Image 1: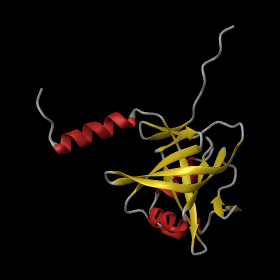
Image 2 (image 1 turned 180 degrees about the vertical axis):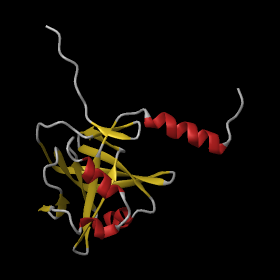
Image 3 (image 1 turned 135 degrees about the vertical axis):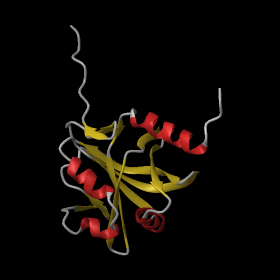
Image 4 (image 1 turned 90 degrees about the horizontal axis):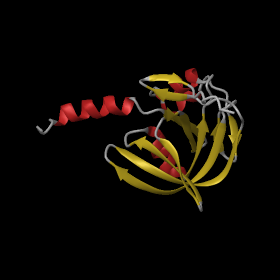
Length: 167
């Protein structure tokens, strides 16, 4: 077996990870009175005791700078009808992303309307993860609604459809 070059390994890894179905969320925080947010697909539960989640954020993101300073963040878990919201928050733009977007204050954190779930977190720690930082969050509050989630698979938004249960 030949050793792949750095570029070929990165390309193969990118293609392989595209086949992994992931949840889509918008991570938000508020710092100096301004809302910040970005779309993530690297988000998952981590622990039940204590309740914790993890999200992965690009080291260069403005959200990460604000999140470090505020010490809190919200995870807006998007529903299947919110692909446009995901695309909107995936672009660059800092606080400008909120210019034409409705949002609510949820215990000091920006919460997007009609999300399938919202998790309010306190930053527990930051862990090095290459060009990203993994943010470990202690859950302070959480709620959800029963609606189909927004997922990302093969570079397309979609949703989960369960198998029909046998009798």
